[in-house]
View 1 (cartoon, helix red, strand yellow):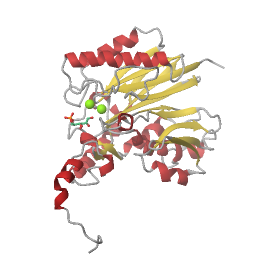
View 2 (view 1 turned 120 degrees about the vertical axis):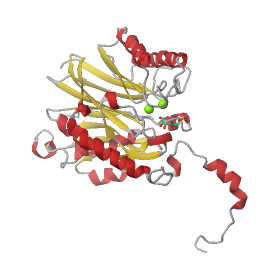
View 3 (view 1 turned 90 degrees about the horizontal axis):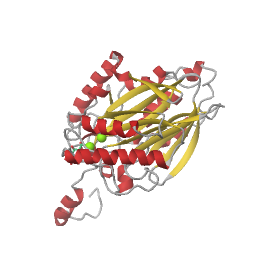
View 4 (view 1 turned 180 degrees about the horizontal axis):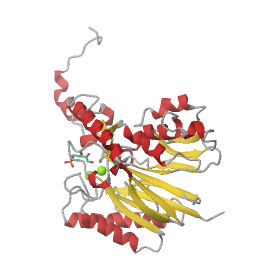
Length: 368
Ligand code: F6R
Ligand code: MG
Ligand code: MG
């Protein structure tokens, strides 16, 4: 058996340029310099989606490795210093702690890591989103790995026909459960249809138990105990040869679904697929964006990227997203454009309720 490679993607918003729309080039240069100088890594690629910096790294030290997490943390700390010097917006906003203590999880940044023996050919896709939350991947992951109308390989590829195992996390009660699909599809949908709470963490090939996909599940508000920005998640997917084909992996994004996290982390909007250069949310701080970068791994080297959503075959998805965005915006401050009270990052409800407390007249029954 060949040696194991770990693909780690760690992301954080260390300051926006301008507002919460994008990342200043000096921050990207700083991050590139930090990673390029590290003897720990086989290879690295630094990019951004909206105001989030994404560190894509390969190494041989496994998941949750303290030194890799320290490197990512130090990189974000350096980017924060530059952001402060340039007075960029919200400098260091995702770094919830002053001190690193061995694992970056729980300190603010989002983390997705997978460890595997590189196959003869190893195509991977790194998805990165801005202005949304980890549960945004539930619907596309369901389509990629469980829906034959999206993934014909589930029907006609003998290596995929048995299906996949889905590890789902309950982010509120800190529990995990694994569903075997297709047999348990209906049970699983009861949970993953509520993406604010139940999030698909990882997916495994049933035949081989090989890791096929993994996502970042960190929710900033649950870590900080208060709302401090949306989580802007990442997702890693391996493709081909008994796993979904590249085109099956990208296909769900041709129909923009509604996700939470637009304007002030408090609105619903369509997830628009875009290339990196178009990933800077502007209109009403959005609409939420997703970028997909493809790499061929070659002994841990990251060959690429291919910027998949630059393809004109996603033009109609963008148009549809903009039409949905228009429609959703027409609802202004009303749900379901505005998120449910429990999910809003910003709220004046406690303050306004307190002020108006004495004006609310108690009724005996609600239908009186
Ligand atoms: C940030 C985001 C933005 C901000 C909004 C207000 O990721 O989604 O919509 O929430 O621009 O930001 P502040 O309160 O920093 O002025
Ligand atoms: Mg920001
Ligand atoms: Mg962001």
